[in-house]
Length: 110
Image (tube, rainbow, N blue to C red; front, side, top):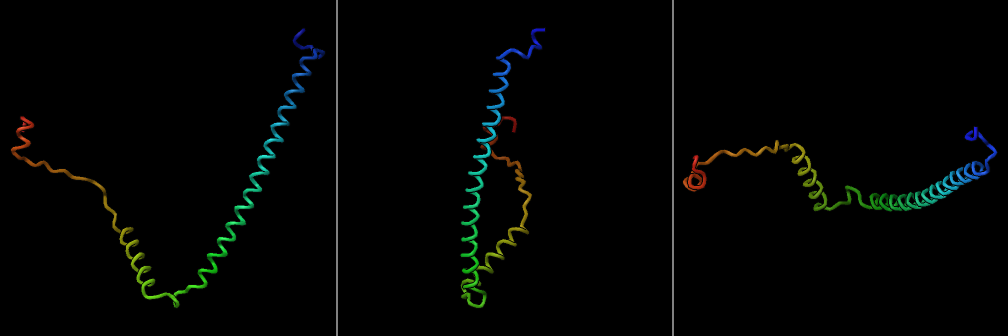
Protein backbone atom coordinates (compact mmCIF):
# COMPACT_ATOMS: atom_id res chain seq x y z
CA UNK A 1 0.00 0.00 0.00
CA UNK A 2 2.80 2.41 -0.75
CA UNK A 3 0.64 4.24 -3.34
CA UNK A 4 -1.93 5.26 -0.74
CA UNK A 5 0.61 6.61 1.67
CA UNK A 6 -0.09 10.25 2.62
CA UNK A 7 3.04 10.68 4.66
CA UNK A 8 5.21 11.16 1.57
CA UNK A 9 6.51 14.80 1.62
CA UNK A 10 6.62 15.03 -2.18
CA UNK A 11 2.84 14.62 -2.35
CA UNK A 12 2.34 17.57 0.01
CA UNK A 13 4.84 19.63 -1.96
CA UNK A 14 3.08 18.84 -5.25
CA UNK A 15 -0.33 19.66 -3.78
CA UNK A 16 0.95 22.96 -2.38
CA UNK A 17 2.57 23.98 -5.67
CA UNK A 18 -0.58 23.12 -7.66
CA UNK A 19 -2.80 25.16 -5.32
CA UNK A 20 -0.32 28.06 -5.51
CA UNK A 21 -0.30 27.93 -9.33
CA UNK A 22 -4.11 27.90 -9.55
CA UNK A 23 -4.55 30.87 -7.22
CA UNK A 24 -1.77 32.85 -8.90
CA UNK A 25 -3.47 32.34 -12.27
CA UNK A 26 -6.75 33.53 -10.74
CA UNK A 27 -5.05 36.66 -9.41
CA UNK A 28 -3.58 37.38 -12.84
CA UNK A 29 -7.00 36.93 -14.48
CA UNK A 30 -8.63 39.31 -12.01
CA UNK A 31 -5.93 41.90 -12.76
CA UNK A 32 -6.48 41.55 -16.51
CA UNK A 33 -10.26 41.92 -16.11
CA UNK A 34 -9.75 45.06 -14.02
CA UNK A 35 -7.58 46.52 -16.77
CA UNK A 36 -10.29 45.74 -19.34
CA UNK A 37 -12.88 47.45 -17.11
CA UNK A 38 -10.78 50.60 -16.88
CA UNK A 39 -10.31 50.69 -20.65
CA UNK A 40 -14.03 50.10 -21.24
CA UNK A 41 -14.97 52.98 -18.94
CA UNK A 42 -12.61 55.32 -20.80
CA UNK A 43 -14.04 54.35 -24.18
CA UNK A 44 -17.63 54.80 -22.99
CA UNK A 45 -16.74 58.27 -21.72
CA UNK A 46 -15.27 59.10 -25.14
CA UNK A 47 -18.36 57.71 -26.84
CA UNK A 48 -20.62 59.84 -24.66
CA UNK A 49 -18.57 62.91 -25.52
CA UNK A 50 -18.82 62.16 -29.24
CA UNK A 51 -22.56 61.52 -28.94
CA UNK A 52 -23.12 64.82 -27.19
CA UNK A 53 -21.14 66.58 -29.93
CA UNK A 54 -23.25 64.89 -32.60
CA UNK A 55 -26.46 65.83 -30.78
CA UNK A 56 -25.43 69.48 -30.60
CA UNK A 57 -24.53 69.48 -34.30
CA UNK A 58 -27.90 67.92 -35.15
CA UNK A 59 -29.67 70.61 -33.20
CA UNK A 60 -27.65 73.30 -34.96
CA UNK A 61 -28.83 72.31 -38.45
CA UNK A 62 -32.47 71.42 -38.86
CA UNK A 63 -34.50 70.84 -41.98
CA UNK A 64 -35.78 74.39 -42.07
CA UNK A 65 -32.25 75.77 -41.99
CA UNK A 66 -30.96 73.37 -44.67
CA UNK A 67 -30.14 74.80 -48.06
CA UNK A 68 -31.77 73.62 -51.28
CA UNK A 69 -28.58 71.77 -52.26
CA UNK A 70 -28.65 69.81 -49.01
CA UNK A 71 -32.28 68.88 -49.52
CA UNK A 72 -31.58 67.79 -53.10
CA UNK A 73 -28.59 65.70 -51.99
CA UNK A 74 -30.64 63.91 -49.34
CA UNK A 75 -33.50 63.30 -51.78
CA UNK A 76 -31.10 61.94 -54.41
CA UNK A 77 -29.41 59.65 -51.89
CA UNK A 78 -32.75 58.27 -50.72
CA UNK A 79 -33.93 57.77 -54.30
CA UNK A 80 -30.76 55.90 -55.28
CA UNK A 81 -30.90 53.77 -52.13
CA UNK A 82 -34.48 52.67 -52.68
CA UNK A 83 -33.91 52.08 -56.39
CA UNK A 84 -30.96 49.81 -55.66
CA UNK A 85 -32.93 48.05 -52.95
CA UNK A 86 -35.75 47.24 -55.36
CA UNK A 87 -33.44 46.40 -58.27
CA UNK A 88 -32.49 42.83 -57.47
CA UNK A 89 -30.84 40.96 -60.27
CA UNK A 90 -30.49 37.22 -60.29
CA UNK A 91 -26.83 37.50 -61.30
CA UNK A 92 -27.10 34.67 -63.81
CA UNK A 93 -24.96 34.94 -66.91
CA UNK A 94 -26.42 33.25 -69.97
CA UNK A 95 -23.97 32.47 -72.75
CA UNK A 96 -25.48 31.57 -76.09
CA UNK A 97 -23.26 29.71 -78.56
CA UNK A 98 -22.19 31.72 -81.59
CA UNK A 99 -20.97 29.89 -84.66
CA UNK A 100 -18.22 31.57 -86.60
CA UNK A 101 -15.47 30.50 -88.93
CA UNK A 102 -12.83 31.44 -86.39
CA UNK A 103 -14.31 29.09 -83.81
CA UNK A 104 -14.62 26.30 -86.36
CA UNK A 105 -10.90 26.49 -87.14
CA UNK A 106 -9.98 26.13 -83.49
CA UNK A 107 -12.50 23.41 -82.71
CA UNK A 108 -12.84 20.86 -85.52
CA UNK A 109 -16.04 19.43 -84.00
CA UNK A 110 -17.98 22.57 -84.96
